Image (cartoon, rainbow over all chains, first blue to last red):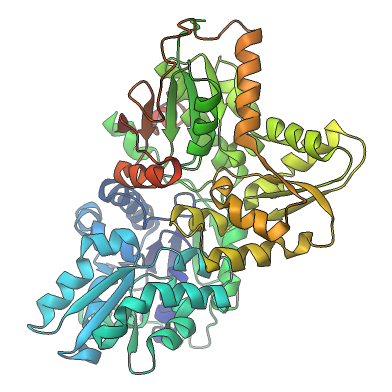
Length: 283
Length: 283
């Protein structure tokens, strides 16, 4: 494996840019290839079979591009499709569920943990299972918050509407005395302030992106896959031309939302088609 | 053409059920085949090329099923893809833009008309062009209201959140003295009460579904395509087993939202795959 290959990242759309940002900050010497499946976003309301199919197509596209490691930034794909992805590509694959769960356990110890995510992620119980496997005691409370995604995408993160929705979704946590709350969807960090206000400052908010970046760093080091041009990219900026961004549709809209999420739009952004190739073989 | 074939209806998802309901009420003697493209919903944030591709695949699926007429219930597909659909199938095709525009012109005459719809529909200017072609004077004001779709789908239609979002989106109509407002997305009739409260009772709300059902009735009569078993289905109920519903994903979720929209879930609901066949030929 060439240690100077880029790291692949995919998400159902633009939300995974929060994970890209965390990776970029922690690993300034690495280059990234990001794929946002904007033609088929969102995944969080779709079935296991469909999420698996989309996730495998995305992973194969990035693998064919030449990457040394694949980060599944999408919580829904991480919750539902990791086994299918690992069977489909040869590079190491890291999802966001396990790092996020570990960060929550580190913060909460044996106290209660809340998880908010898409419908599909909550239904999979992936976070609850991961957290429970890491510690013997302490409860896990899960809640799907589907409106948070469009609120983040449409620029309503800092609004009374977002505050009202957050109050409605999170009211059931009031009597659960949470120590930590996992932001189990890549869009939710955009609403961090509103969510934090609503649950109160006693609850530590866990952003899977930062935790995932730490795991990626460890894996690169232990596998001798760290980029060897250590000083080459020290002065890098987010979205500069060393990172390559692909979307499956509507690049213009992606660039606009990226600007809202990151403060800058990708220098290199390309629309691609990634489907249909499998059907050639199976029909 | 066999006049006793069913009428095909497709939508990006569950929203087109409001059009199905209007058709069912106006044409109780007809049977319907509905396709909701739930694996790729929503269309309203996607590009022209992608919406065309999805719309053509949906239309071919329904045409292959055997239908006498195709209703494109999705406003976004009607706005962007009617020429592509008409080139792809042999049955008559009716979209919702023209009927909705005509109903708005009937209601408003020369006074101002507002149009609310998805981003893609508003960007296409399909409603503004249709309305302007039907009357020489009177202005058209358009506004994308992307959050209305998830609010309707997630059951927030009657909430303070919906009222706040409506106030924000519709405030720019305050000084435009509208006579009519087109609900230019199949989800928006679900929010009719909140939208009506917000714009005031002087503004007539135009639901394309009812207007489309009238056009379908006229076309069936003028083409001698009316079902000839006139009394057979007189006592029909919504979603009974004479109508067949297909979805491309997550049938369970579709049934749940259908129940919210129609008060009943489809008797016959099937998940199908409709993609990939085209790629066989083009790759």
